[in-house]
Each structure stands twice: as structure tokens, then as C-alpha cells.
Image (cartoon, rainbow, N blue to C red; front, side, top):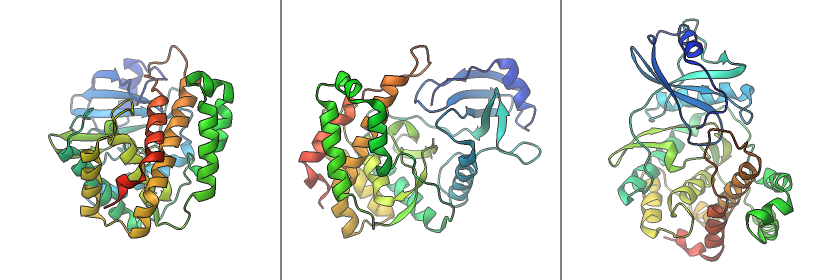
Length: 319
């Protein structure tokens, strides 16, 4: 989450008149993340999230996200549905942006997850995948394997090497390896595709919410587990791998949805792909984020270190 589009209290107050949610008491911009503009709202009736969709979110994709969240909520998954206005509309316009008012879920995001928290998150991810088995709408993964080479080209060799000497060569070699070996016959479903710790709300060891579904798409189900593994099982800088967290996360997932033998064999490669994907998007944002944006840039090298670990330790996914 972030703030790119600044919205005044008066504009938010007028916006809320479309809904039965009370009147505005306070509004605070949320700086974490890099995708959309987000505000935490307090009204006379409770708390809500206001999201304005920025350049990476196509308004045409919003019906998919709405249907996905409604489906998961109907199946008992802890997700934040979007709120309809008095006319039954969930997609709004505010300050020249598509916007939605979203249910606020209690809980906090953890920065140093415990084994119990990782297990609960893995279980929540498995339950989400199980609930999505009968979800029919599809959306292409705009950050999938086929798009990584284009993203690397957009970053540019010189800029990648400015981030870390030799990074462009590392990226090019990994792209070639993944092109040659990427699996295409694994089970697919709608996936979250961005389940970092800051997208999981917790109270103690209990998951109270999975949030920020704006990368959700149709792709390899085990790839979603690989993304979550890369996000949860290392120190923030990627320098340390946490084996107990890894085992707890995977064990929690399997308690809700078994991993097939073919999926488990693919996990080392899928994890390399996940690490490269976030290396490249972080590099692109590092290069292109405006200096005055209220957003925290994230170090691409943290995922270079994850990639290097996955390249040399495929055994971490063995039973």
C-alpha cells in the first residue's frame, strides 16, 4: 500500500456520502507498499480502507478482484470484501482514479514471523487455494514468467549493474535457465501472487486477514506457495534462510491442501522464478519511483540473495 494520489478530507467526506458507513472522523495515508494509494478511514460507524487504483491496476480487472474476494468471503476465508454504495456499485471514481471502499480487518502484520505464525499463514493459503477450486473467472498473470524478460529489458543493463555489479548478467542467465525448464503442466487456480507478511493480518498466532489481492491472477498454484516461501522464510535482507519457518509454512499449507509429488519437485524452480520476479519488480521500482512519492522503496538485492540461495539449495523443499 502507498499514497500517490493525495485526497483531501473534504473530498473523502463527500465520497463517503455515497455509502451507509457514517461520516468521516479521520483519514490517514498508508505508506507501505508500492502499488495503489490507500487511506485508513475512521468514521462514526467504524474503520474502513479507501483504495485509489494507480497505474499498475487496470480498472477492467477490478470486477475480477471483486468476484474473487466475494467468492473467498462466501467460503469462509478471512479476506476484506469491497463495500457497495447505496446503488449497489462497488467501483467508484475519486480524484480521477477508480476507487473502492473496503472492509477493515483487525490485526497487525508481523515483521519477524514465528513458526506458529508461518504455519497459520501456510494453512490460510492452502485453505484459500482449496476454496478457489470452483472459482471460474480467470485473469492473466501480468507478472508471469513470460513477462520477466521484458521487465529486465525495461530496467536496462546499465541500471541493473548500478544496483549491483554484474546483476544484469545474473538476471540474463537465470532468465535463460527458467525459459528452458519452467513447468507448464502443473495445477492452476486463482492465486494471490503477493502474500508477503505485510499482506497477512494476525492476532497472536492466528491469521485474521489476507489482504491486497491486486496481483491476484490465474497461474500455477504451487507458484503461489513459492512466492509466499520467498517472502516469509528469509531475513528481510535475504541474507539468512530460516529453515524452521520454511518447514512450518509448508507443513501448514499441506494441513489444508496436500502438495503432489510433481508440485514438490517443481518447487525449487518455482521459488527461483518467484525470487527473480520480485528482484526485477523491485529493481524497476527502485529505478523509476519518483523521489517525492510517499512510498518506501525496497532493496532489489534482498531478492538477489534469495535467488542465489534457491539456486544452490534445492533440497530445502524435500520432505
